[in-house]
Each structure stands twice: as structure tokens, then as C-alpha cells.
Image (cartoon, rainbow, N blue to C red; front, side):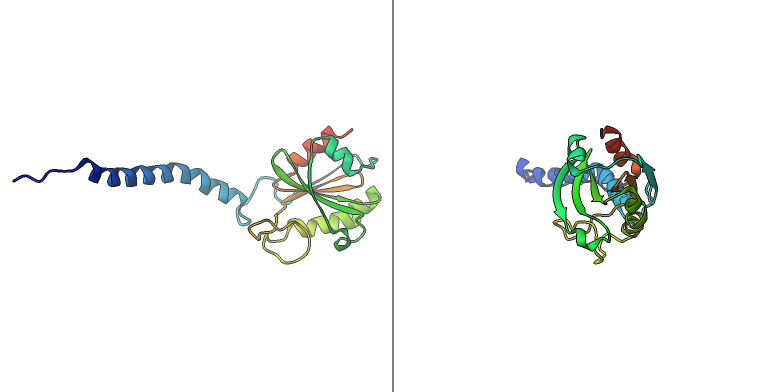
Length: 168
């Protein structure tokens, strides 16, 4: 007597093969994305900085008008000389904005604090940066001084400079 194969019994192996195929094809992109955002992976522009528009005195409203999405105000008392600190987004990248009374303050104490922030590990307990819902601290890899502002940039100065270019 021959054994009859039920069509339903073929579905499980087929489903497993499809699942493996999908995870391999999607997993490749995910691995690359994780490697790019990993603190150990060298990123284009990591640690770079730029100073532009030294005569400018800007407010948070100027940034919002240029397209920056304001998300949360942070405690400015943790940064010497800063009058306000805001966390937000531009072009789907995190940008932290630190406001100082003058360009001199931004290039002095502001740049020193920015250098500390971009050199910090994402899970550091030292102040600065916003802690995400996963408990990780946002990591910044570059900064831009624009007038009285210091912008901490997630990956490189590119998005920060695009934002500054849109400011009046």
C-alpha cells in the first residue's frame, strides 16, 4: 500500500523555506544599516566639524522655519554657557541644537562640549544627548557652529549644513 502525501503537510516546509529566504534577503540590508550606525564602524564624516555664518544670531524659531522638527527641550544647565538645548530632526536625522549668547561662546565652551559629545559612546551615562525608548543615548558624530548655535549632527556635517543653508 503506497503512502499518500497530504498537501497540508507540504505547507510547513514550504513556509519555513520562504521564511528563511525572506530573512536572508532582508537581513542583508539590516546588517549593513546596523554596521553603519554602530559606534565601532567608521562613518563618513565622523568627528568632523564646520564653522559657518559667524555674524549670525539665531533662535529656535529660525531653525523651525528652515524645516527642523522640534521634538524636546533638554536641560541647558548641564552645558556651561548654553541658554537653551533642543532635540529634533531634519531630513530624518537627529540634530541637537545648543544655543549660546554669542558666536564666541559657541566656538569656545560650545565647541568644547560638542567635541566631548561626539566622542562619547552611545550608552554613556555622562550628560548630553537624548536617551531613546530603547535606553540608548543618541550618538552624534559631527558638529557645526553656526553663529551662536552649535548643532550636533547624527552622522556627518552634511545634514546640519543643509539646514543652516535654509536659514535666513
